[in-house]
Amino acid sequence: MLEEALHRPDIRRSRTALEKLLSEDFLEFGSSGAIYRRKEIIDLLVRESDSEDPGELLAYDYSLTIISSDAALLTYRTRRTRGDGFERHVLRSSIWKHSETGWQMLLHQGTVIG
Image (tube, rainbow, N blue to C red; front, top):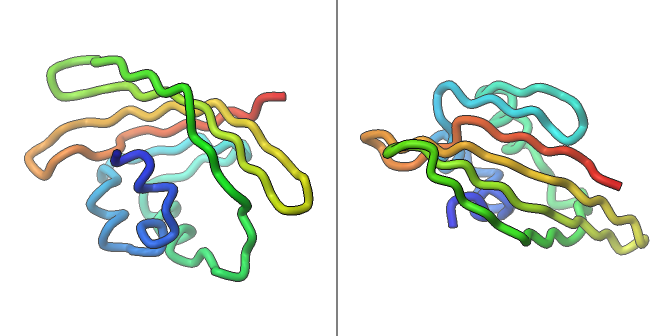
């Protein structure tokens, strides 16, 4: 699944892979409250370090809604668990748009939940 590819470190650190997956008009409303455009998020992701311990990510409760013949809305939940016991739960939504180059993410939003 393309969405889950973006969770993988090898994809997140590959500028080429990210440029293929994220639309030129990409926008993210991050779970931190920050707003990112395509260039900003790609620059941040490719600099992620192996020394950072993001913890284990579990994605679940997927729901796909077809918006039009060339667009889809994907919603799901994530739970990130670190070794120190910290857990973070986030509601996520992404709009994927199909073009001549394939499916690309146009919009992503993460909302932290209790």
